[in-house]
Length: 519
Image 1 (cartoon, rainbow, N blue to C red):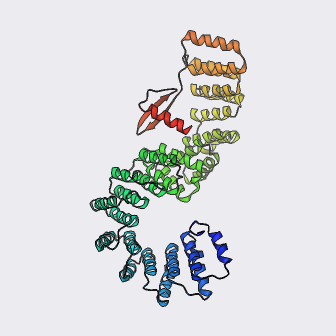
Image 2 (tube, rainbow, N blue to C red):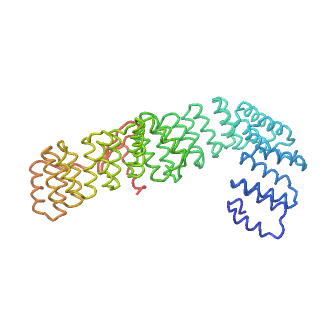
Image 3 (cartoon, rainbow, N blue to C red):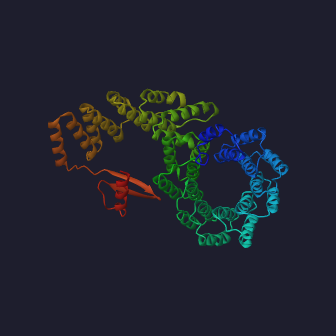
């Protein structure tokens, strides 16, 4: 019981405390370790059993042979085959089934086929092991012929695993027509809703470039697991349908399933397309938040994606957007080392580093990189770099320094710089600098309502009610009004704009329903 539930330490404790250990107990422990991916312990326990003087039975031999298949230790598997023959179990069906699986995984498909042919009374496991072995070793036609032979023999009715192997074989050799016939039989036996068969069926249609049927087959599965989701996400990713793949990913997350490295590699592979950097950065931001970015295979996928998008700058920018300064800075410093090799960071790189410093509040580091960029890297600071520094100082509450920096810039400050400073003054209730910033904004654009609104808020928060009343009166007389806040999202290449309390969108009811659920 403990072994089947995965509690192997409890099972081991009971096993060791048994006054007398018989062959059933040994076999149960060996099988438990094997089924819980602790193959080395299963083999060690089998050797210990032999040294105790107890002879194995067919169940113990079958378990340890399957363990060798899991370990990919085929030399030991061949030795166990000889041991089985010597023990008189070489023609036992349980042992033979395990040997078919072991030899199939050992790329010895001829040996597996020979043993399969010698099984006198083949059961479902016998047929399934050989059908799967042929499919996995590139002998897809043999796999399908054997499946038909099993059906025609009338002795066994296929289960979801037989269908799964057959669907995989059809997908590998693009046998859509035969796969559709199998689908009909699978549907007739009501096995198409089972996870293994349904996942393989969906994958077959995807490999045959029939995504409509692939998605339809996927949604027929009763309770799709992570493997099933990875399969359908991978299908859309491989087809270059990035937005559809991401929608499926979000649906999977909404249902409570956690992605693994395979999930995100599928998404990042799709985002390697030249037009999909934005989606790739969104996926990267998610990885940083959940801690999946440390996986080696995921890192390789990220590097591959960014390489196709002039990746160094895109990667730094993604770290910056997540506030991951250490990662952005390490990458930048690695790039700095490569200067001697002729690979220089450019002005976009520095914008990413300065943005990262601003996001996480590392003011001194940001000022350091700004001050060295010209003499270390030959990059003359632009307005964009200066905007980053203003934001860096303003976020940190160093408003006097931010204002002084604006005064000392070699070019005229633009409206964005002044708005950055004004917004920070609103947070810190700094009336003096806030008033100056607002005046500068209105000098550039007298109709800018944001300057009036932010300055009104500063006056109200600091108790300057006379100034507040005068400014409100000026807004009214000038015809300035506050515009409602907006947000937008790009879906399938189409920009959707949302306004506060907006009900004009065709799918607004569904949007508000989802927001209530998320709330």
